[in-house]
Image (cartoon, rainbow, N blue to C red; front, side, top):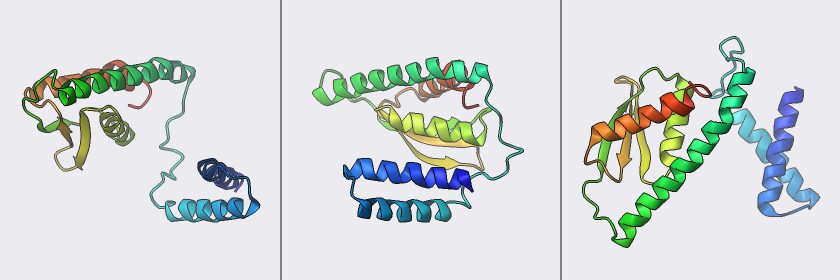
Length: 164
């Protein structure tokens, strides 16, 4: 119960920060909205504590280079998109690329999808659980094997230790 109250308080604080407000009425509205969001998403959140993996010190330490790699990926994607938009590089063949899940857990697939969308130049379109593939639109899909290899290399090198 205390974890639920903490979540409501944190979501309420985020709501108040977004509003840039310190009025008690906004705090009440934020708390009500936070409670509704948490109650409404309870079925979607993982509740099986046995299947949750525990974080050890190596995972926490690996998070630092992972975060830096994500930032570098965002900068590279921004530069690539800027080159296309400004006309420095011609837009050759944007398109859809199917990227296999590989050894990723469900959490790993979600994180990979978020990272693909976070970095400019690619966006997660859909997840095909039957074929175990992420369907991604890439700004440069002229070599789908290279796109797949880049995503897989990032996973193996940076993400796997933190979000397998």
